[in-house]
Length: 550
Image (cartoon, rainbow, N blue to C red; front, side, top):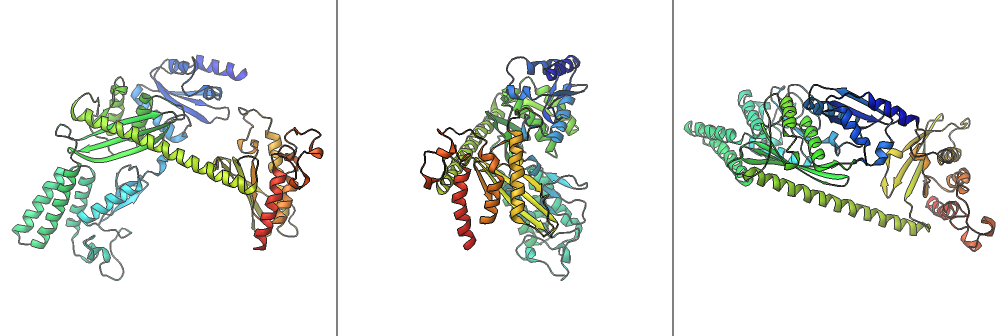
């Protein structure tokens, strides 16, 4: 009740101005970052009626913070900075957005390199991307190596100590600036052609190659002219294969998003000089289950905050018809020049945007199929494990423990967790073993101490509410299977420590464990053995003994 009253007081003090607001939990963690033309009205809409992110989201809000801006476009830019900084769960996020690859060009070096990278912060360098997969980057680099023959050796200076060209020269992937086979000016002209090519200035590249080929032919340098001819044919062939944009569209990005439940997919078609230069696909996390318009707007803001260059024209779908002015203002600020955001209504723009939308829906459907296939594979694996160990139910939660000794005085233990057959890294824990090690490391005592602490933490956490700030989800869950690294000695020590867990569930058998209806040879039933732990331990003891003998 006190928390509700506190929130009501904070809501009354919110300004009726444009800006950014943040919902935080009781521990100060950011749950959601939003923008609005009126912070007060927008926040009120979250609390009136069922929230799109679910009632659980609202129940977790402990406080509200805000930042006032001059315009909604400024709020959009500020929102993305907060999302990058705090990575809130209920905002739209690019999956693994920290690791998207780029192509870098080291213009700060005398003989620049063109290379694969995942960073884009070094001054004096040009970056192109982000690309949706590392494979696409390597394919592009391979094509550029065939066309323009840049050096791939590491370091600011080309060459090796031997003073002879490397293999790249002989397979026509480098023109060997290390031994003076190409001078600095000619090499940098090749690099400029690469920059033009990656920027989508295909017509400029084509005209430059035509000029160089004619100059070499006039000078009767026919071998050099043949090299430029081959490059020109390769560029024209590439332009012909990708020229699907039509004559009415020169340079633009066409963006479409498909949304279903907590998943979404965004497609970006990059058209440069009338050529479909790249098609990028991004999977999005949509935990708040927001609609197409919100997802598309947040994706555009996040995507162009990571892209080195913003085109003059961005084409979107009808869902953003009322937001094009705000987006155009924000992207113009990001570009440092005018950007037009337009809804595709007819012609080549509409045709390509609808093609991007079909690709987004198809990619989202394929992603769901892959997730379902992986889920089924995990279920099958858990069923096989259940049968092999003779468990009464699927081992949905599995915890594994291992002891590590560094010298006689430093012992630590780790706990890894699998839920539903997949790692749950948020529940991983590390323990510092506190026991007496006067006689040196003792694995048996360490296992007993760590599992004893694990059992004690479960008993402490079991009765806490899921919304209690003191609750630790990793220790509040009861494992279906515990795996210990070691043999019979470690297993026996672990079973002694797990004794309290065997009584954590009430026995439903008449007469209790002493009169369990199962035959003596089958140990105890699941309810009498505390989720089957004793019975599983008996089987695991034989397995561990056999493994130790081997």
